[in-house]
Amino acid sequence: MAMSLNTNRMDAYLAFLGVERNLSPKTIQSYQEDLRHFIAWLDEGGIDLKELTPQKLDEFLTLTASRAEYSPTSVARHFSSLRGFLKYMQNQGEYNFSTESMLERPKLGHYLPEYLTREEVDSVFESAANGKNPLRDTALFELMYSAGLRISEALGIKLSQLDLDNEWLTPIGKGNKQRLIPLGSKAKENLRAWIEVGRPLTHPTTDNIILNKNGKPMSRMGAWKIVQQHTAHLTKQVSPHTFRHSFATHCLEAGMDLRVLQELLGHADISTTQIYTHIDKEFIKQEHRQFHPREIQDRTGK
Image 1 (cartoon, helix red, strand yellow):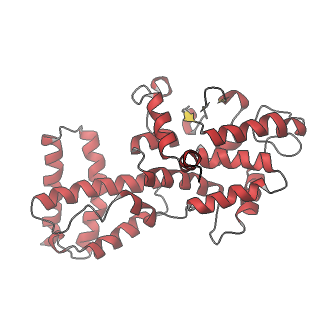
Image 2: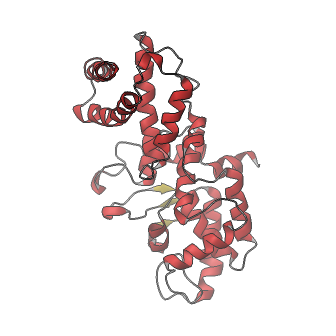
Image 3: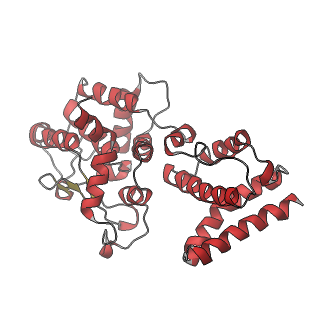
């Protein structure tokens, strides 16, 4: 009984999106994908939406966020689909609690898997600054955290893909997709210091920005060791990917537009030729300046 009722409610909502909001079938389908998990969970627990308490909902959100295959952006997308659905149901008198407090942005971090707090990230940068190879290690962390690069991108990025004067990075991601990432002032300063002062001392044999002490491209193992070394003081299990997670989480928590974040992470499904035509480059730069923690700190001097 409750089962078909919950499904009917979802169908009513999807119909509303199609008619009232004039959304494309593809968008509606992605809402449906997100909501299907929620409806299935309600039905398995024999819960009627009208009886769903915030405590019970919290269980579902925690479960969703802990699924290994979900990235912070997909968790955020799930949450936003769910927020829209519950808000609609609240207006219809089918759900009895306010959706405001429960799914607000800053709480998102509370559900996300292994990411570092801003203080922890600061302590990693501090450790790198006091380590054996401060300029290089700091440059590597800037690429992983300030630019949110995948480790393969951070190690593969070439000098030619870095435009220090205009403050852009253009990594090549999965499926040879190129994207544009704004460089914050601290990241720019630290990358410049490594490239101009530290890097030449290794007698580079390659165009890669990040090198080992012999001037060769750094291996994943090498990067892994650097991460281990500068996160040994933390109580968390940290991998290179944790920095990308942390970048995404901190930007979302600060209120960055999800589409901009997806562009920055290279998740957005667009072909290289029309890169960033639909989101203005300056807008991306402003969003990054406004919401990236290292930029916020830099402005407030904290």
